[in-house]
Image 1 (cartoon, rainbow, N blue to C red):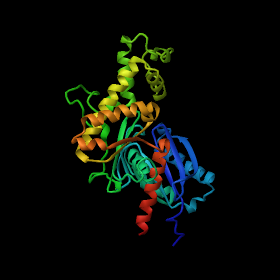
Image 2: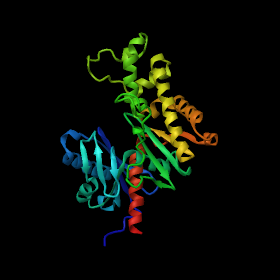
Image 3: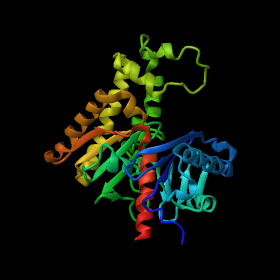
Image 4: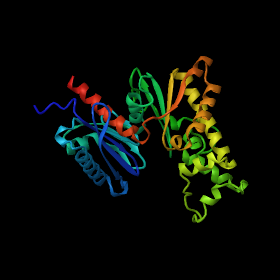
Amino acid sequence: MGKDRSEGPVVGVDLGGTNMAIGVVDEKGRILGRCKRKTKAMEGRDKVLARLVEGIERACDEAKVPMKDIRAVGVGAPSAVDWEKGVVIHAGNLGWKRFPLREALEKRLDRTVVVDNDVNVAAFGESRVGAGKGRGDLLAMWVGTGIGGGLILNGQLWRGPLHTAGEVGHVILFPGAGPGHRKLEEHCSRTAMVRSMMMLIGHYPESMLREFLKGETDGAEPSIGSGVIAECYEKGDPLVTSVVNASADLLGLAIANLITVLSLPTVILGGGVTEALGKPWLHRVREAVEAHVFPSSLRKCEVVASELGDDAGLLGAAMLARETAQGQKG
């Protein structure tokens, strides 16, 4: 038997289609060392895994923690995940289907590895050391390029018997609409908002967006990030304000439907859109929730912003790995 590492540091990985963020985390949820790498998914799985392993080693070096003292590794992946088997079901931005990520990493690291959906682990992190600490059960929704969700029920992640609970971005809002216009994330994500703005910009000759779009190549994807949207929203640009507010209203409606079904006391909103648009947007979403939730007693459900920000996935993956490893010990 080797050294018992159940109370030692763990590693959390937030694996995205563009970047991977890696951290060594202690028992109190403090990040002792970090490493960030480009994912470069186009180079293939083996190179992505090699880069991930190298990033873990670098984070351990920064933390001054030898790899032999790491108890477990948690990974949040941008995909529905078969948690029991550690299989990434379909990560489109990585090009992975039915990939046994846990098995592949355990062979390389010789450590317990836990793999879950990226928003699931972010929700878990918020529930343990973030905006959800001490709040009990909650719904988390991350609004960015797309929209993902995670549920904490009875103090634990709720994945459902088929392992895919929380895919809120794919909830149908408008079944009669054409393809690309039916789902929640097709109306309320940053991608959807930018699409709407580009469709409507011809009707807003004075919009600030025109300045940001100068020099764009015809036919190219417009480079309008959350920061640009936030700047225009803060300054009251009529085009951006109308699109953002309509999106917030729909998001609040969708949340109200989920709270009506689940009767939860807390909703945590995170992701790039939430962070960039801040309190005015959050207030608009909250008003829509209160307007549509049933019964009226559920208006007391609190809608709050993430406290962990970009670290939610990393910390949540690490803490999920720790609790899983402790359960295995027991």
